[in-house]
Image (tube, rainbow, N blue to C red):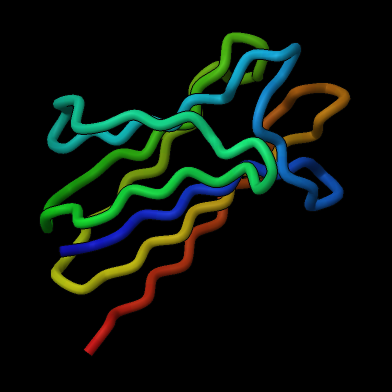
Length: 107
């Protein structure tokens, strides 16, 4: 099984869990089909998906006040994989700046 950690950050690296009091939602799809959804934690701006079966996934950060309203990252997960994704936004403009990913494989 694999784990996915998703962090939403502003341009200064601070956690961004909501906008205008509405949570940023993270969705996980597998082969185009919905698998799971989480709100970000208030303090850390992180959503964690544990024990994900191997396969092709799309991780989506969604909020109606962000541009784009959906940011996507595609990944192929294998057994014993830890995927970390960071979506970074320019908070004043609510514009996506970068998407960074790091993959670790456990023995």
